[in-house]
Image 1 (cartoon, rainbow, N blue to C red):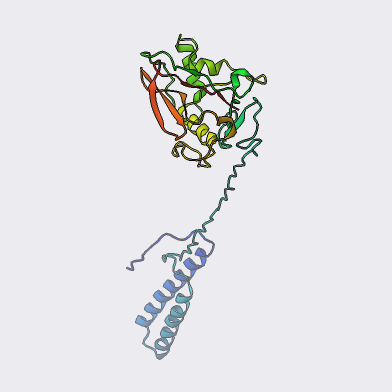
Image 2: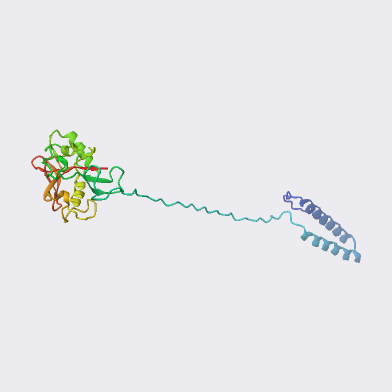
Length: 278
């Protein structure tokens, strides 16, 4: 008996040839083996090795059906996508006014910041003698008002908050003739949007009034310089801001040295100069 190993044949068309060749070699081997056993002639001894040798030569030329076919691995390709983001450019609107220019309300531009929102880039101070058609008369003296009462929302100090402070004082304080109400009631050249400046707005006004040439911003306190013409007769005066400090005091600035401090709301009478923003 002969044992034959069997494996799964490949599903390709060449598998039939492999089977036929293998059977041929097997049958030839069986015949030769039987012949060698039964024949002692010299011819059989010579032919048998030749037949077997032919089988050995034929067998290597046939692909082993049980061997694993070589596989070819294709390396994956990687695609890199580069996204270019265009830089953003901020374009500032050209300034229509400069510090010192006449303003549309009949006053003078004292502060310009084109990075601010539209409607609050320019600050204009009312003319000297603003209560009397700009006749160079001194600014009025009055109190801040409502001592002992906290005015909700009137304690802001930054540039751009004076208008809100003033509105809160006008609506929340019943006292008449006070600084915020005088400024709020002013109108000139058909502009009635004047207000009492906040602490930081007053500081910028002081820089203009004394022509200090200092850098803008609350970090730089007004000092030095020489008086501009529309503040020449009040350079040693104290001016109210609209910034409330507490129940009994509000902030003011001494236009002369630039000092900022607090004064009693009702017991102190200080100067008033309206401003507007646009």
